[in-house]
Image 1 (cartoon, rainbow, N blue to C red):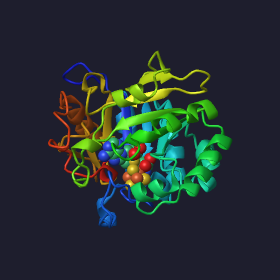
Image 2: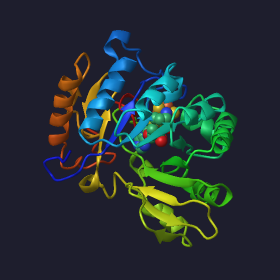
Image 3: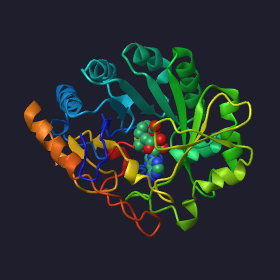
Image 4: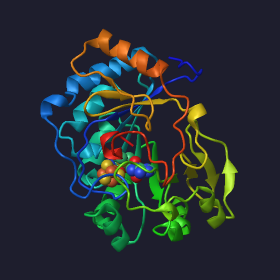
Amino acid sequence: MIDQFGRSITYLRVSVTELCNLRCRYCMPAEGVCKKDHADMLTEDEMILAIEAAASLGITKLRVTGGEPLVKKNILSICRRAAAVPGIREVCLTTNGILLPELARPLREAGVNRLNLSLDTQDPEKYAYITRIGEIKDFWAGFYAALDAGFEKIKLNAVLVGGFNDNEIVSLAALTQQYPVDMRFIEMMPMCDSPEFGEDAYIPFTRVLDALPEARPVPKDGGVAKLYRLPGAKGNIGLISPVSAHFCGECNRIRLTADGKVKPCLHSNAEYPLKGLDLDGMRAQLEKAIWHKPKWHGDLDAAHRSGAGRNMNQIGG
Ligand code: SAM
Ligand code: SF4
């Protein structure tokens, strides 16, 4: 479906849970999330119905996310059923990787085509700091399991945090020379509960290019990342700049939260509830959400926090 600004909306990000086995500082509060009433969350059948309604409006690509999607007990069934919805051509999943040793192969068999894994630092102490409770050895075990399982593409995501990992740009980028993976650097977005990051924490993607003078531009792959490649690399460097150079004009995505709200824009508090509706009702809400997708998300920086009204784990980053 085309929105009122002429953008073709083909990509749905489905958050299957707000819960997580980590507590990344830019994403969620230290105490975790206040568990919502089970009855307020979408059931598996409702998620699949919503995906069917979205596919009937032209959605072809899904990203399963969260929270941490792999802590969801029925994640394999959700992925298998989502991949089988007519019109859905691609199912991707974003994870912190911790549970991949058990789940990488079953996810591949369930029809997940691509995986994104989050890795902000290669330093064990810094990993423990940024995730508050994580151990980096668990990430690496998950990463190797993902490589072994034969996904079409694996992308690593690092949130750029000034004063934290800007001195690791070169070593993170070098992972593309060592492994057949893309390494993407994402500008940190100022979500509601991340006041600990001051102005200096928001660094622009151009810092990555300054650190990698030998990187050469390569054509985009249909996503929003600007792509570069290092000499001899097996994968690309991706730069995602929601803060310093927004890409709202080419945004083709909408989001569905675990509690059943369609969010046409990550940084707007506009939400269209689907919980309890039948296929036609969901379709009508999705049509409204797509038509009213905001033109752009407004300024974002330390002084202008996101208008999302939720933390990232409650939306689906
Ligand atoms: N738990 C999974 C993971 O970490 O990959 C999936 C959900 S997480 C919310 C999805 C992505 O959002 C991660 O790559 C994470 O780094 C990113 N993210 C979370 N908070 C962010 C923020 N404030 N700014 C930019 N990216 C953020
Ligand atoms: Fe969990 Fe992902 Fe948020 Fe980290 S970024 S707290 S792993 S949902």
